[in-house]
Amino acid sequence: MRKHFDFWSIVVIALTLILFVLALLIKGLTHDLLLEAGVFLVSVKLILMSHKNSVLATETEKRLDQIYDLLRQQNSPRSA
Figure 1: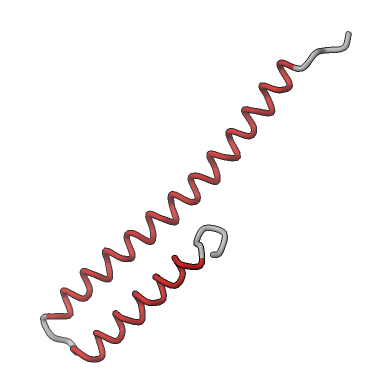
Figure 2 (figure 1 turned 90 degrees about the vertical axis):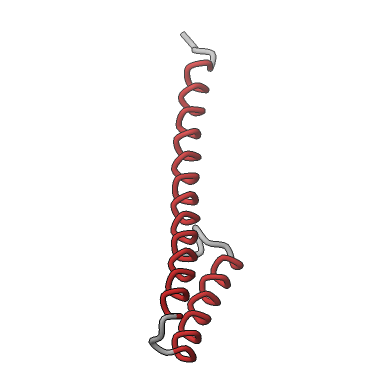
């Protein structure tokens, strides 16, 4: 998990979950629950997008390194 999330992202995730559970306990199952659930789902969506971007950036970096290595092999002087 630490590979794709920094310390502050993990803090925000934990804080969001704690505040949602706290609001659920304080407000109960009222109509305000829909508002709290909506805010929670938006936070989850942002977290998932952040994770996906991190994974894609890692994959892109690996592919660029492979391209760089191939180009370096092509341009290297060949001993005949």
